[in-house]
Length: 142
Image (spheres, rainbow, N blue to C red):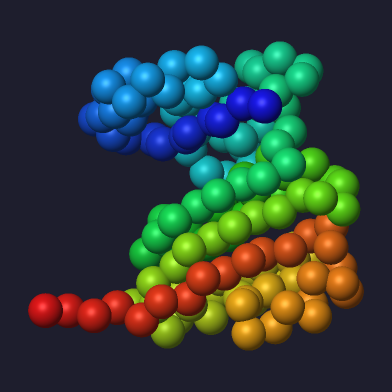
């Protein structure tokens, strides 16, 4: 198994690499620059070895803030996720903007994901090969 951590900002990539090294996560761990969207993702996948082109689990945490990024995000996820019953997208998201929140649900459904929340465990049985596990969290400002 291998973990691939992607980011587009150079400063963040440096920080991820440093954090991985400090914590001893160098074996089976890769940091890679990836910009979301079909064209950029296709180029990124073309540069990878045949065995590293698809992933059975994608984990994202609080990555979507603007509506314009929702579609490119799901283009990337769709291109990178294997087509097996075990494949999963786990997505943590904080509700901040109702337009973005609704866009996530709409676009996820349009590319075939079932949205599974802890409140709906029966959805796991309906379409197990394309599931979006969304951990919705309200934003609290102090």
